[in-house]
Image (cartoon, rainbow, N blue to C red; front, side, top):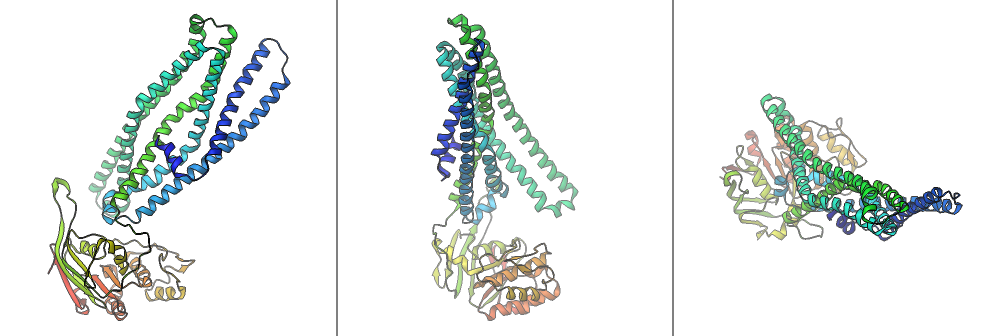
Length: 535
């Protein structure tokens, strides 16, 4: 019952009134049965229509409508409050997780848990609360049947009980299948992501394009087969419930009079009660599949949160503050990635590197030499497997990393361009406009209402806009990973001869990954990396 626990634990909306009004609604719904049955008996006996029963019916109907509407409204508040709290909490934890988890967990898996699963819980709320109310109606109907005839009550509960036992027997298997479907759906989303992210690559390679689509098609078919198999289980349960209803009606009419002395009024009354019971019971049974799916969705969200907790090392809730940077040293630092297929592990090191305030350092090396991994080690996105990092001649501890990362402003090759200057206080729009003109972006985008009007730019233009955001952050160390690679010759020269010198003049340290050997003379030092080691 993870779903019920989810609502109870996560939502701060008062629930007693909702439960009370739901109970009153169910009782009012059940009382309608007795009024209708009582009035039907009066008509059957030839009595005149009783004004009192009509007034009671109308009052009870008003009570039913009011309490049911109130309960459903409160249920909506409860569910959305719970979902919002969990989604915000998971998102908050997600931003504090370590980079290796983000790189290995899979974006589709995270997206589907935070969005798709939470939406499923939200969509199921009204139906599930209504089904819970109908359970009360079912209970009232059974009490009414017991009042009419104890043997009839025993027969009714026996048939209905067998249906419940059949559902419980299959529920564990269905729940396992739903987990497998959820996993397969995440694989399918990953395939769609591959199309979107790798669109250029597959567009010019038809064979790769077809192979990727074939893989996605296979995953989709497997998901379809799993969903069909799960759906068939639900259909069997639904058909069994409907068949049980007809068997119950037949048992009351044909079997009950044989088992016990039952008069015609009792048989009619029990039959009417069962007919009245069928609607609420059908609603409860039809809610079982949705309940099972929502229960799996809750488990998925909590599982994601658990994985994030395990992958997070941050413990301080205080605001981070960068130390004053003087110098940095890497001493025999190594980093090893987790083993991949066949137990093969990749890594870099041992690395030895120094950086001082106001220094311009160029890092060069071929593809796969370890430059990107080195940058992640430098910025604290990776923790060294061995060796030491010294900041201002003091060894860097794991507890220092939150503050240590604040030294850096980075533009990686796979950077993300935000449309707002998040984290920049007291933004001077005139200063931003001046920087846009310097970067020749004033005709491409503007900065108004605290955001850039357009970020749909070329790669080189995006890097220039990212540079503006980076400069406004005013950090002590700047990292530019192949920043000039996508610039025209004019801006490439401007970057090396003007922008880097301006940063150096302000006392900033700069690390630039570059292949432009014609500008190597502008660096204070050039460090080459080969096979994961500094030369």
